[in-house]
Image 1 (cartoon, rainbow, N blue to C red):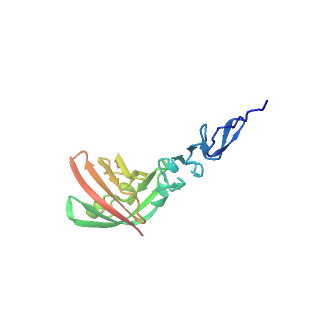
Image 2 (cartoon, one colour; image 1 turned 180 degrees about the horizontal axis):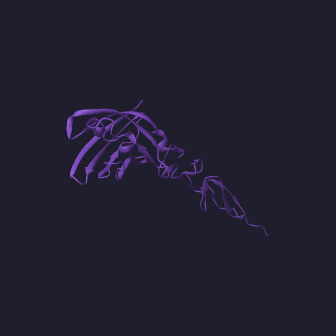
Image 3 (cartoon, rainbow, N blue to C red; image 1 turned 90 degrees about the horizontal axis):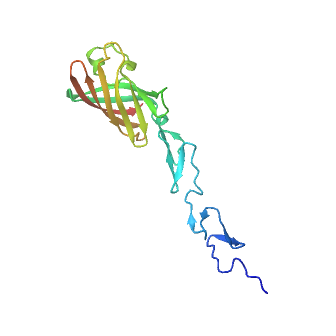
Length: 194
């Protein structure tokens, strides 16, 4: 009596039949080794997960392998050009710094926002007095509503959004509100790395 080959009539496509069961090649699975894993040759940093062959980065990270901390691509000193609706034909040019936030690796600090304070009262405020903490992602910048803490500025609330860094330039649009005197101003700033 002849023994029947357990692999007779078993097609393993991307694998080898062993004792009637398919042993799949790397990257393949399923009863006949037909399901391909597009992540088999994709390596993501610990700050990302492979999804359909591409690294899906955790918030605050970018790059093909999710190894780039987005905020680090913004750090530096910038020339800022600010235009506000309160004086629409006037462009305020000043220097601002983008720094790491101590609160989160997804956040950064932008100093010297709303330089109109300096224009109206030279020497009264330092760039850190009107700094904002922003949240950065691969899709843009968010300025959560926040109050300034410097003396005389505690009643001013700032919020807004911005663009992703494009080489050495980015921009933000924001609203500043004097919550005591019911005054608002809308501004946009373009930042160019020095």
